[in-house]
Structure formats: structure tokens, C-alpha cells
Amino acid sequence: MKQKPDLSFWKLWNMSFGFFGVQIAYALQSANISRIFATLGADPHNLSYFWILPPLMGILVQPIIGTLSDRTWCRFGRRIPYLFIGALLAVLVMCLLPNAGSLGLTVGGAMLFGLIALMFLDTSINMAMQPFKMLVGDMVNEKQKTKAYSIQSFLCNAGSVAGYIFPFLFTFLGIKNVAEKGVVPDSVIWSFYIGAAILILCVIYTTTKVKEWNPEEYASYNGVKDKEESKEENKANWLTLLKNAPSTFWKVGLVQFFCWAAFLYLWNYSTGAIAETVWNTTDASSEAYQEAGNWVGILFAVQAVGSVLWAVVLPMFKNSKVGYAVSLVIGGIGFAMIPFIHDQYLQFVPFMMIGAGWAAMLAMPFSFVTNALQGYGHMGAYLGLFNGTICIPQIVAALCGGHLLHVVGSHQSNMMIVAGALLVCGAAAVTVIRKKEA
Image (cartoon, rainbow, N blue to C red; front, side, top):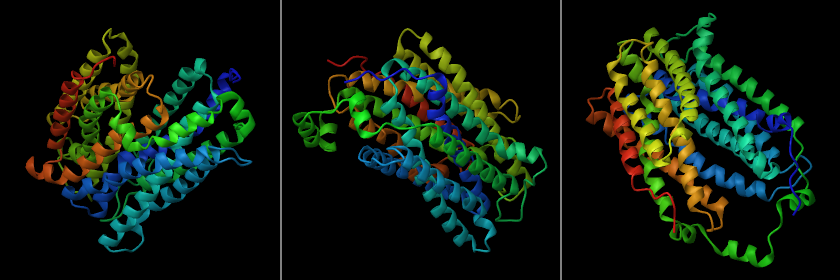
């Protein structure tokens, strides 16, 4: 097997640059979906049900795209066709989704239209997102993978910040942030339009600058399994792999359950929580509510900055389990502080703290699991299955969200306390993880 060549910084940059646009789309979705459906007229107790679709599509689409692209060879490449098609679909849906309330439909019709658009948006984002990770795996040597994923991480965070602040920025520039009842404001609509334009330009840049290897080149750099090894891999179905998974796989999965449920409630209820706590309103058609929606984007950007800063601190912990647990506790305390802070700028403090928990969630789980899987084989299949520990908790949390909201007095701000408690439970679950498997 030939050694993969070293790539220049700009070749590594070009390979991941489209991820910037994809992440803008994902950030716009994360920060604005609850706001859009609340504006259309959704009951707060039903908001969590709209959040079932994103993780459900993630758990279905990503393994399928991975499997299909493994078997695809054409003149345009192996991964890039899926990247480009996913981006095109995302652009189309981003132009339709925020207009759900402007088409003259009934409230129910507008929400159904929005729900279908959301399903296609998340499908297309997942379709466009997965190939970027695969391109690095295909074409970057082991020595440069850390650098390549660092570039991807930078573009991911930069795209998130841009997508989060768009509605606030466009309102500042004079675009209307209020609209008639049941209609999404122009500031949000234009955020999706501009995000769609940036997405397709970034993806076009990557697709024109990156040339994937042909099958012969790919085989020479990545090796080809012999027949016996291929037979053994084909015999191992998902149930067999799960049955034989190391205990760390399940223990980290338990931590993931609490963590991703907590963040689902952040994305779901943060607009209502900030509107209630800082702007003293629960009326989704009011100017104050829409101002709160803009400010949530700023707070999410602060969280992203906090995550970047804490990612520098994490490696300083000599014990990675301690670093993991401490990060989650800090994030949990940040969540619990939100309902008690009534100044919009002081809300920066809890969201910086939440960023610490987010940084640990992105870095630690895969570190523990990949170390535990050394010698097990089927690394790709196991990591695909491990993606379920991200998606399944969000689906469960979405199904339970409305009931929990009733329990906490129907105050969306109280759901932040629930999220904080879940993150602290995740920190407690870290204690059962063993750093090394026998």
C-alpha cells in the first residue's frame, strides 16, 4: 500500500471549505426552528415534536449515504456527487421553509408545509455533511488528519457563528423583524436566503477545487481487503457488533444520552425561555418575542466561542475523565442559571459555561470509544452505530418534552433547569467509564 502524500494547507482547506456553508445552514436550523413554528402558531407543549425529525433523519441518512458513497465511482468522484446533490436540495428547501406562513395556508397547513420542509432540509444537510468527513478519511494521511480535522472544526465553528447571528445582523441593518400574526419575519427569511447562497457558493468552490482519486489510485493508497477478510466483515451484522461491543461503548453511550437530551431542550426551548426571562413575553407574534429570537442567535454564537476557548483548556486535565465530568457540570450549572438572569448581556455568562459542556461532548466520547475499539475491527461500522447515541437521546427527549413542560409549570425557562439536571447526570455517569479495556 502506497503512502498517502502530504497535502498543502490550501488543499486541506479546499477539501473542507464547503463545510462552512453547510454549517451555516445547520446553525440557522438549530437556532430558528422553534421560533418559526411558534410564529406559525404551534403550542409550546407541542414544539418538541417538531424536533423528532432532525435526529431521526440523521440516524437514517448518514449510514445510508456512507454505504452508497463507498460503492459509487463516477467521473465527478465518489463523495462529491452526494455532497453537491445534498447542497442543492438544502438550498431549495432553505428558500421554502421560512415562507411557510406566507403562502396563504391555514395554520395547520402552514405547519404541515413547514414540517415537510424541515424533513427535507435535515435530510439534505446530513447528505451534504457526511462526505466532508469521508473525504478526509479517503485522501489525508495519518500524520495530517489532526490538522485536517482542526481546519474542519474551525470552519464548523465559524459557520455556526455566522448562521446564529444572521437574524440579529439583518435586523440591525434595517430588515423588518416583525410580521403579521402567523408570518415569519423578513429578518429570518433573508437569513435563510443568504445562508442558502453562501452554502451553494462554498460547495461549488470545494467541488471545483478537489479532485478525488479514481478507483485504482484509491486502492493503491488505502489498500484492498483480501477475500477472507471481506467475508468476515460481511458476516458481522449490526446486532452481532452491538452484542460484542466493548463495555466502554455502552457506558459512554449512557453519558451521551443525558447530554444530547439536555441540548435538545436548549435548541427547543431557548427562544421561549429567553423571551420569558429577559423580555417578559410569551406571545410569539410580538415584537419582543422576535427580538428574543434574534438574541438567542447571539447567545448561541457566544456558546460557540466558549466551546472553542474551553477546547484549549480540556487537554490540560491530566485525567480525561475528570475533564469530561467537570466540563459537563460547568455546562449544567450554566443551564440552570438561565431562568434567573434577566439582563440580556449577563446571559453571556451561562452560555459561555454551556460552551464548556459542548466542547467536551464533541471531543471526549469518540476519544474513549475509539481507544476501546482498538483490536475489535469494524471501526467504521462501530462509529456509525455510535452515532445512534447522538440521535436516539434527542428523539426520546423530543417525545417527552411536552409532558415535562407541563410538569415544570408550562414555563419554557424551567426546561433549562431540566437540561442542567440532565447534564449533571451525564457528569455522574462519566464515573462508570473505564479508560482502558482489557
